[in-house]
Length: 550
Image (cartoon, rainbow, N blue to C red; front, side):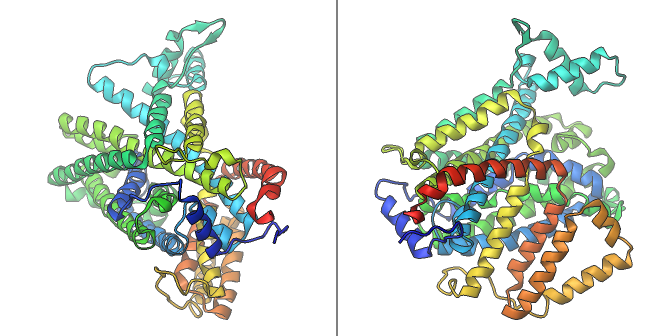
């Protein structure tokens, strides 16, 4: 029977049957828990550990190591919810599929559409970051790549105008960009400047993903082992150069300084959810996906904490506001050989992150297409390679072409409302399935901790604290979205009391919602524009062609 409601939901049995029906000529089940953990580590330990970790340490001092512990625990709340869903609905699609069985089609579409943006933008940022490290690595080996083939037009032109204006104290990066504009060849009256390495690495990784999961798995496992060896080497060697006096004061800017880096530190962990897109290629997804998510988060949290303590112990935290903190601290102690190894490992780390993200996005397209919400070609599986071939090719071009011509700052502004939104719906979905009694047969269940008498009292304590510190109204004025946060917390307090909600998914919702309030207006504006475009496509095509509408 057809259903004309935009809130029509798929049953879990329907999802599993659809996956089984399409599996005959579909994806190959070859992934074990070690492979999935490797993919998770590859996604999490990317550019973050080689760049943003330094700026977070600059803001909060050595105490940022505790922030990594806090954020990893917060991520585990969400990861546990993903793990429970993965054990109940072991199919490709990640949060998109989970929203479909819990909140209905319109929410599933919104999440799927948001994930398309998030994966694409993440890949573009990673590709451009890879290009910067790669060019720097070549320079370290005495190989100079043509500068006009390593930068986008907008950045170079802006730097050139700044140089012509005679602005004093131009940074090295600005001078490099301005000279790239000067040296660029001219076609008619237009200077030709592109970030060629970013486009090339994207297409190379896309080719690997296209050829097959087995090849992608082997490449990922190799790259992850290589970068883990280097990171452990950094920790063990750096530990001998730690000066304990650099850890005092431990929190020089207080709790506010530490928490100031909470959003950027959280982004360092985003990526664990990408392995849920490979559910249909797992040998035993109900068992292995939950384990892999927890394993990769714990491993990465330990590495992040150790790296932070080593960095802030080797040099004073005030020196860490640099883009390459790991290489910088070894250059400071005249250990240039180690700095060179780190530069190479950065290229390796970012390559493996790009591989995982580039592998995840086509499977989101595929899941949406299989449900009739996108065109059928996106769910086409290659007869030989057993990968979503058309979706993979489209993803390659969608990421590679913009990364050739646009700067990283533009893409950074596009993150990361959709990711937090997806996390919130997954946590909320677990509460809904528990309430409906649908999760009783889950092979992995979140440990139940009754939040009936916890959620509400915690709200009162939190509000009392901010009012006592005279920050309640000032923070609301600075971040109006906090009003939504407090309202949702109040609603969850009532619902938790009525239905005895488990505290862990509630904490996942509140943590992600609070972090959403830290994002700027630009992020929300672009997300809403993207959402509007997606809704137009849904009502023109997806609503009519949905399998549930048939």
